[in-house]
Image (cartoon, rainbow, N blue to C red; front, side):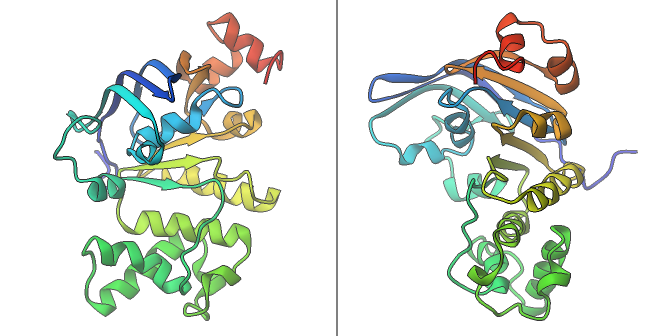
Length: 259
């Protein structure tokens, strides 16, 4: 029997090209992201991983002198070119956990409640409080902060701040979670905590993450994408790709020939 908590929302990239100031960053990218899996995008620095991630919910549009063509399909609708795309709703459905924690300048409670207020979710006070508790619990933070919910969020440790940002993203009920080097600014213990959370959360969400850390991808990825100078070189089951890559370029990257 299918779990009602599991979501089945297709996210497909077709023939995506992106240039900034005439420099092509993404080249004819074609991908289908699997549901309720952790997809890790790996590759050398500067190969377009973060740009690809931001394109999935149109955060790339904050960049000047940008040209883009191709399609990103969510529920079969192209969210790149459609003029009627509601960006607020799109970014609710495809949320981003950034590289560095970015708690809002308000209390712990209001950080989680903020997105719900913007999207008109859980307007009653009791319902909002239940939502805040639910998602702080889901990221393993409730017991640590339940007695100081109205304290400034910036007083939390970096690891706690990142989990708070994740709770804020989850509270608006996304379909996909984008994670751009979400553990790179954290200590090893906090990084492991976030990794464990992602493994647990894939039961309900589809997670797409960029990582420069191959050991991390080896630990938690279900599906892998190897990107090199803006091109998809290889995709597939993570264990198979990491242990027996089909492409020679993938093999050299995994062997540390370049990074």
